[in-house]
Structures are given as C-alpha cells and as structure tokens.
Length: 165
Image 1 (cartoon, rainbow, N blue to C red):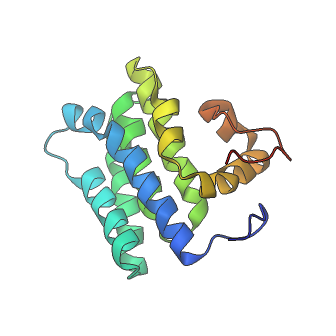
Image 2 (cartoon, helix red, strand yellow):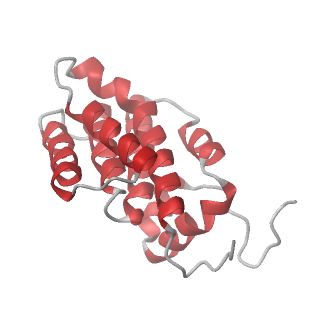
C-alpha cells in the first residue's frame, strides 16, 4: 500500500476508518444511555455504521438519517455533558460512510465525552485501536484542522520519521 498522506482512502480503508469510528463512539455510548436509556438513536447510528463497514452497501438516505437522528438526540441531552458528546460521536461515526473525514470527528467527540465524565485514558484507548496503516489520514486531517489534534493529542511520530517495523 502506498503511504502518501495526501491521498484519499480507498473504500476498504474508509470502511476500516468507519469501524474504528464506531468503536470510538460505542466506547462512550454508556454516557448517553445512562442519561437517556429509552433513546435508541445513537446506538442505531453506530449499528448503521458497522453495517456499512461490513457490507459496503450505501444508502445515502439511511446514513444521513441515522447521523441526523444521533445529532438530534445529542441536542436533547445536557449541554457540554458526556451524554451529548457521546451521541455526537455516534452521529459522526455513521457519517464516515459518506465522507471519511468524519471518523476523527467520532474520536474527537469520544474524547470530549470521556473528558466531561472525568475518565482518563480515552485518547490512548482510541490510538491503540487506530490501525497503523490509517494513522496518516488522521494526522493529515489534524494538520488541516488543528483543533482536532488539540483535543486528541495522539502520539504521532514526527513527520518524516520511519515507521516502526
């Protein structure tokens, strides 16, 4: 695989990013469900994300609907609380089916949810699960959107450093 950080992910790479995004969202989903146990929208968004990553079958109306529903659920949760951020993570995760750059958004909101709940270690948990061959996509997006890396603070190697073998 070519490791050109300016390239767009292949469909398989985008599906892998979506799986990682779903993991990030699901890891903090309990914050939302503890606050709003009868609201299935964020969990449904994560399920839709996983289904797309597994099958590659894309229905824009379903993906968009699941994302918008998760974000609507977020608006009904307490402002700046872990439940709101967790629901937003789910909305970003499913949107990865449409545009790959939503995957780091799911991670970003996952970190914000964990931080709001006072839980440490979320960044490390996410980074360990981000496949090494996909890290350059997240790093690239972080250069384009510095606020992303300000929150995630992943331990990316310096530019030009040789990858570990």
